[in-house]
Image (cartoon, rainbow, N blue to C red; front, side):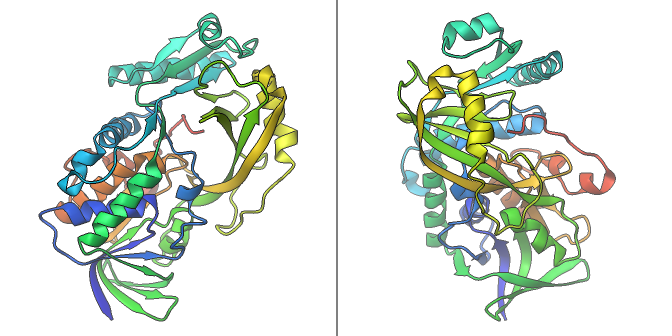
Length: 392
């Protein structure tokens, strides 16, 4: 049985961040193993993301995380050992939320007040102001919008994760292609993992970074983790007549969101029946485009009546059905089992803060940089849901 101080299950964006942050700490010299079932990340949520970041959340902890992560991305090379690695490309086209009724407008006002108090650059726009800046939008039903182009837009997260893995490997982090099939636990501790290959791995701490499969891993320890895979569709399309300016990621009241993607455009949508699916269910509903997505696009932006789909895919959100917020930190009873799960679509952008937080917890038993205790597992047991309203 191979012993490791920390075993991380899942090597995509979150797992890579945890491994790298551990490997860079001067107070940690333990052995770290990453167990990843899909080494090419073909089916990982990280590979199907739209790779965006934003400040426009409705809870303080998520705004604080976003601010930290935006700074980390801007200064990525400063965080890398010997300042090696690239400058991470960012395209700050911004996010534009549209409200079509009084209740939705009030949500935008409350969120903007919180964001402004914390230093985010979000501002409210009425329909006239929106039309002046983006005259191609149909705004007959829009009563208010919120817009921010500071630290909001696309970032090259795939390159960031690749460099995390490179430097972690160089620092001694090991990675194997395998799958956990059972956990051994007693005396309030995870003792070992049994792998599909037949290997048995002892661990001092176990990090659940298994994305949409997180609940399966937790169940092996008798824990009900309310995280489930939910499908999200993405389409990249070309317009016969491109818009005269960049399109911010526009969150439409219909539920779709669309943005500039280089010379093309990208639109995302949830399925009509937005319920849990199996983690290996990537079946594509080819009728969703005609039934829901394209009609909503053309109604909001008439220039998109004549477009051609270039690419399409379906991925999974690791969706926290309780409050759509991440679960971060140790289990109250199995103290060496750490969660980094249930991001509900914003894990890619939150990875720098989450990886650092988990490394701090493992090494010191507490948070040093950002206090993420509001996202702990205890809130699920105590019925203290921390609802995040700004889920796309």
